[in-house]
Image 1: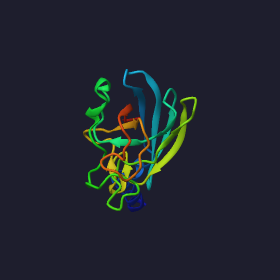
Image 2: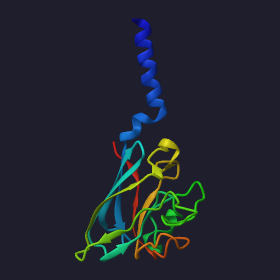
Image 3: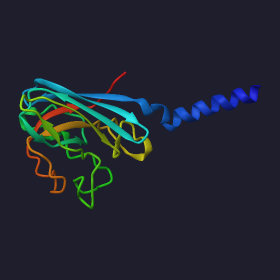
Image 4: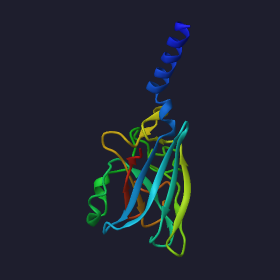
Length: 178
C-alpha cells in the first residue's frame, strides 16, 4: 500500500513540475488609451495547445485594428505611444505576419473589428504563446512580462515589421490572476 501512495504522490509532483497543472492558468490585461483612461480588458486562458484570448473594450475608433502581444510588460509611456512595450513577443526571431511564409512571430494575432459604436468583443486563439511557456511556446509571464497593444489600423499580416498597423493606440499589461 505504501508503494502505491508513494507512486501516486510522485505522479502528482511530476505533473505539477511539468507545468501541466498550470494549463488552466489565467491572466488579464486591463486596456488603457494614451491618456491612461480604462477602455476594456484582454483575458487570457491557458489551454494545452495555446491561449484563448478574450477582448472586450469600448471607446475605440470603428474599423479593423491590429492587435499584438509585445515583449515587455509596460504601458507607462502612453504619451509617447506605448513604445516602451518593445517589439512583438518573438523569442524565435520569426518574421511578422500570420500570412508570412517566414512567420508568424509569437505576438501575432488576427485583427479586431471594432463596431460603429466603438465596442469590440471577440475571442481569439493563438498556438504561438503561453502564460508560462507551456509546450515550449513563448511565455507572457516571464521576467519582462508582456503587453497587449491595439494599433490604429488593420494588420495586413505580411508587411514588416507590423503589417502596416500604424501607431499604438491602446495598451494593457498582462498580469496573472489569482
